[in-house]
Each structure stands twice: as structure tokens, then as C-alpha cells.
Length: 406
Ligand code: ADP
Image 1 (spheres, helix red, strand yellow):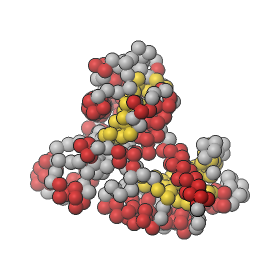
Image 2 (image 1 turned 60 degrees about the horizontal axis):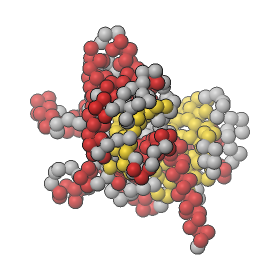
Image 3 (image 1 turned 90 degrees about the vertical axis):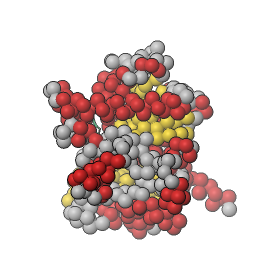
Image 4 (image 1 turned 180 degrees about the vertical axis):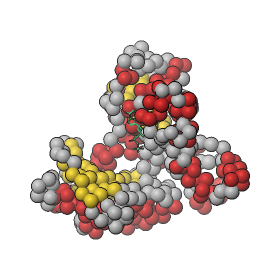
């Protein structure tokens, strides 16, 4: 089955066309500057990148250009759009109502719309992508794969905030968690790779990218995760603060004459390792280089980031009463050996030790702990697009099967 995987941001759109039988990517690319001017980057498998500048006032024009590129007689990979059997959409927030991937119908659209309040940057863009695909490819199955879904197995003691119940009842204010597609994919891959017994397995996934989150996965199900109502909670990130005393908000609003929205912009866009490095960079490649050159602020940023990751891992070992494996993934988790080394240096009490040679590896699945470690640490690359493709195929096949039975 050919599955078109779409990941819409507010002014961008990433896509991959995946053959679900071979799990190979036939073509991929992205549209940038939607609503500003417009730029399509398109790359067929084994071919050169093509860049086309063209107006993209909305996501509909952007998707229309992607579809044209896919069937282009010269560099396209399809004879006609009939060959696309389903479309899988990454959707940020499904709230408490959509707790698993779903074939998109009016109800699903209405809930994604309701959740725009909870995911104001992403859900509206996700909806635009869904509506554009429905318009341009009528009759195809569209599937929504939610970033929040995998975390819905968390118990109330993990997801409830200790604030008045009326706020939970009235607004469903609680921890939801994000990067669920990645946590689900990587925890499954880790169980398979290490030959763990799924039912008894205890895995911690550290998804460390620009956005970073960590989850505790027991028996294949998420029991806790670090992001919250929004992706601001938890780890220190590229430009997000992660956990902090909420009273900081009131203090700074009063003393700096800022609004709550100003503060949230600062905590989302001007904080994290970017702030700790004195605005040097949010990119770990820059931070590492600066640290090696003796920059103390860059060193503090990397230290504080790694320390927070280690503390979360420690707390999740307690939450699961043990751990079999810790999987590092995401741009930083897969590439930044220095971060993995610093994190693992705090975890010797678990009987975990790093193999420095193995830890030099980047972006490839491998074990980085020593052979006699009691707990295994591994690099397990994520692949969110493939995970979305697999979920889409599963739902479409189930729905097809159900129809035949009728
Ligand atoms: P997201 O999907 O959240 O935007 P990614 O998972 O792609 O982020 O991670 C991007 C980050 O990964 C970069 O900002 C950078 O900090 C880090 N990164 C990428 N490549 C390397 C590398 N070779 N060495 C160290 N850090 C890297």
C-alpha cells in the first residue's frame, strides 16, 4: 500500500510517500514559507533534490504542489494519484477524547478542532492539512495519528495535576504528553532489538531533539512521561525551559511588566539551552564546539540538560520499580555522545556503565553500555513517519476487513 504521510506545521509541511510492504520511502520533502511566499523541496528515492519556488497562500496549494510533484512525468514516482491508497496525518493533540489513532470522520475533525485550545500552534495547521487532502483526493482514507495517544495509558496518579478538581472536570487540565509516536515506535523497537519479554519489560525512552521528552514504558504501555498539558513541561529543551516554579511567572510579570503571553513566549522560545548558553545557540553541535573551546555558558547548558535527563530517568526507575533498558533517540539522543556519557555517568547506581568506543557511534542502532552492565543503554533511532505509515495501514486494513464482513 502507498501511504502519504503528512506532518503540517503552521507555515511548513513535511511529507513522505512510503510503500508499506517494503517500508521504503519512494519520495519525500517539505513545503516551507506557506502563507508567506512558498518553497517546495522534493526528492525522489535515489534522485536529486528539486527546489521549486511558487506561491503557497495556504496548505491546500502546498499539498497540491506535492501531489503534482509525485505524479510529474519526469521526476514523479507515481503514474497517478490513484496509487496513493491512504494518507496518514500527524496530529498534535487529541485531548482526552481521542486516545488512539483514528480514521478521520466528522467526529474526529470536530475533536481535533476542540483541541486547538490545547495545541494552538499545531492543531489548526494539522486540520488544514487534513482538509486539503480531503479536498484534493476525495474518497481516500485519511488517518489521524496523535502525538498524545501513546500516553493515554498513564494512570491518574501520573497525569493529574494537584490543582482543584474543578479545573480538571471543566477544562480537562492534566498531563497529556507528546512525541507519543516516537515513544511508541522506539519502545517497541527496543523491546524487539534487545529480545525483551514485552509483558514484563521496563523501558525508558529519552527522545532528545529540539523538543525533548522522556517516558517510562512498562509492559509496552506508557506509565509516565515528562511533557504535560503542553510540550513546555519536563526536560530542558532547545529553547523551552521545561520544569520551573510557576511562581517565576508572577514574579517576572510584575517586575518586568510582562503579560502571561509574553512570559509563555519567553519560556517557549527564548529559554532552554539557548538561554543557559547566554543565547549562543539551541543546537548541540554549536554548544559542543563552544564548550570544547572553553565557553563556560555552553558547558553549563550541556551539563544542566544532561542532569535533568538523568534525574527524570532516576524518577522513572522508581516509578517502574526497575528498568531493563534506556533508549536514546532524537537528533541529540542519536548523535550527541557527550550528552549520553554525562547522563549515564549519574546512573552508575543502577549497575549501568558506558562503553566509550560504542558511544562514539551516531545515528545507528547499537548498544552503548558495557557487556556486564545490569541495565542496557542503547541508541535506537526514531522514525515517526514510518510509525505513522504502520498505524495508517493497520487502521485502513481493519476498516476494509470490517466492510467485507458486512
Ligand atoms: P526536532 O525534530 O525536535 O526538531 P531533532 O530530533 O531533529 O529535532 O533534533 C535536532 C537537534 O539535534 C539539533 O538542534 C541538534 O541540537 C541535535 N543534533 C543533530 N545532529 C547532531 C550532531 N551531529 N551532534 C550533536 N547534536 C546534533
